[in-house]
Amino acid sequence: MGAMAVAQIDFQVVEKLKDGREVILRPLRDGDRKTLTTVWSHLSPLSIYHRFFSPKKALSESDLSYLSHVDFKQHVALTVCARQEDGTEEPVAIGRYIVLDDEPEKAEIAFTVDDPYQGLGIGTILMRHLAVIGKAAGLKAFKAYVLTENHRMLRVFARSGLSMTKTMADGSTCEVELSLDY
Image 1: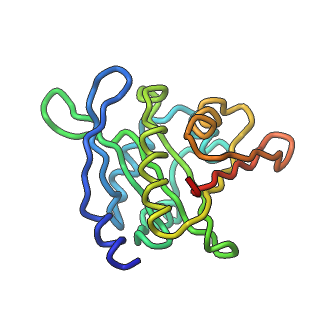
Image 2: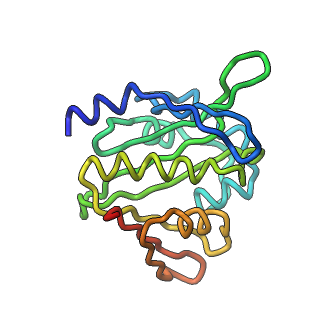
């Protein structure tokens, strides 16, 4: 596992979006708060609600610490950067999984994609790469809690190619489990 974690920290992949633009996928570095705040700054209130299940004006210091503490063992996070016309790279999405303490063969998975980049295949790209990393790390499944109204995220999971079970966690949230036995 240690060699896998080190290998993951150094990779960078270029992917093509549905509209033909290229994006760069790379690991989120431990402590990379700037990427988190950049992606956050482009989210609509609805996107924030879909991701955090409640309105939220800003990421708290506690949120930033938790979300930026990435070790590539228990907490794996990838960021997607779009190339700008001036040649710079702007972070536009983050996908992550965090291994569950009570079920160490499973991890909770989550995605945050800037509003202008939603629907272009970024969730699918992140899903594919996180599944490969998770399976190589010995995980058996991903879990996600998704608002039933978040049809885009549910569609990404349903079309992932992974065996999926979906159960209602409560009246507005469903629990999705995706098997990594492929």
